[in-house]
Amino acid sequence: MGELQPNWQVKGTYNEACAAEGHCPYYFGRDVEGGCRYYMVFRIEKGEVNGVDLSGITVIYNGDILYPKFTDFMEHGSEGGIYITDRATEEQREVLDTLTTTHMGALFMKKNFGVKYVKIDAEEENGTIHFRMPFGEMKQSLVKGFDGGPIRIENSTIPVLNNLKHCHTYFWTYNDHGKDFEYKDRCGTWADFVFEG
Image (tube, rainbow, N blue to C red; front, side, top):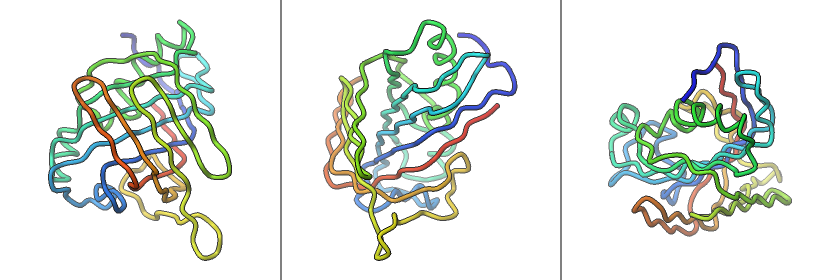
């Protein structure tokens, strides 16, 4: 695994769902009885790391949070798998192997079971997004307020995310590394992200 040279940045769109029926309590610094699990997607729209353009790369983190206390989650993180679109070139993969295991979703996933390059499909239309990959899928839509605009989440505890909007997740599934999750009608988040170093 190589090192990341200074002055890199990646930005794009973030979609996430978890096991909570209401909005994820961790966003508000609250504890969650029994821990939680999540399906996080980072769609890199613009960015260069070590001189390599990563535009158009999609990364999915499927994690299991084993700790009910917010402070324990922040200290110990979660465990799970990392999945990257198989359209990544060899040059991109050299950078992505490091970037995805040290930054991005790795800020929350302290124990990963490895990186897999897989076919990832994303269909987006009118505020609805549907992700598919061999080990799971997720479909969600923006939730709109009375003014017709999306419901926003202000003052998030996660500084790398901005323009956070609330989603309804119709379903999400995950089956790999001994984990088998299936949820319907859960919360979700649709946001912009920026990572730099």
